[in-house]
Length: 79
Image (tube, rainbow, N blue to C red; front, side):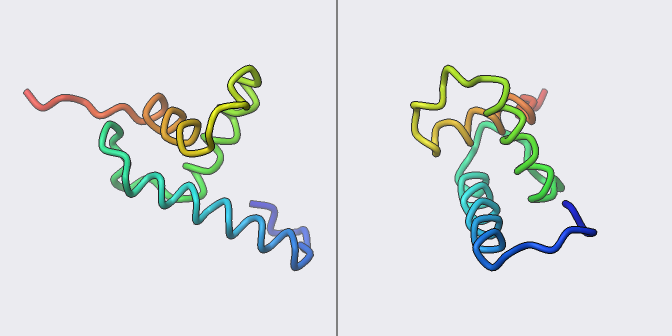
């Protein structure tokens, strides 16, 4: 998300890992409406959630990513 900045190889690896992890969790999350949501937006939502909830940082990454996505993009029940 910073096109004017050059990243180190290590930073590129971390960015790819983060995007892949969030994407994998999103693929297995059924309680969120994630159709059409870009991966970059999902990552930013998770980052914002983690910054806003430091008391939860001891929980597993899987739980935190899923909770952030479900809260940001709740699945609306069909009528």
